[in-house]
Image (cartoon, rainbow, N blue to C red; front, top):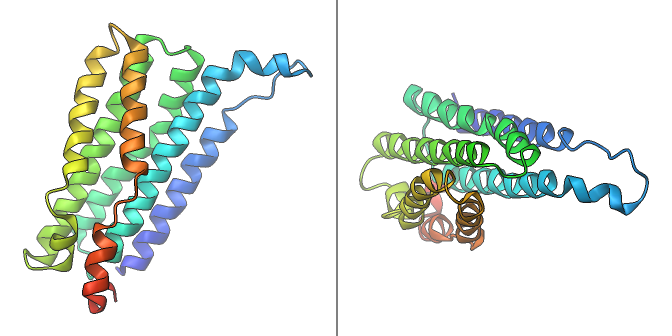
Length: 197
């Protein structure tokens, strides 16, 4: 399988995930702006999830810029990541409708912890397929942001049972960390343009 087909499939799944999330936003029965107030938790949950899914889509795209071959193991690792991301609409709706109760907030963190593990595993499988001297290895480096994100999720999940809003603040922090552009892959490919082919 070509990496283009894998990317197209992944893009389609991620687009469907975002579509499902937005369909969970119900139109209020009231016609004034006050009708939006009860929807604030649901919309906040949606906005955070939209950012997270967008971050995964962006990083997936950048990761595959440095990929030259796709193996069966890569296909399965990619499906694993997409499986965890496909749980995001459920976690988003539950967290928003519960007004950030501890159980749903913890479950939301578990989803993104597993998605982070899935992304890490995908990167490791790709590295195994490309070798230690590949542009992909140079581009990924030690993945400090990825390791920090996993550690923050691990802290946020149990914290949700005591202070759910503190866990939400950690989720927002992780999103902010990833919103800062990561140019490692672009810099590596600029120095090795033949690897992007």
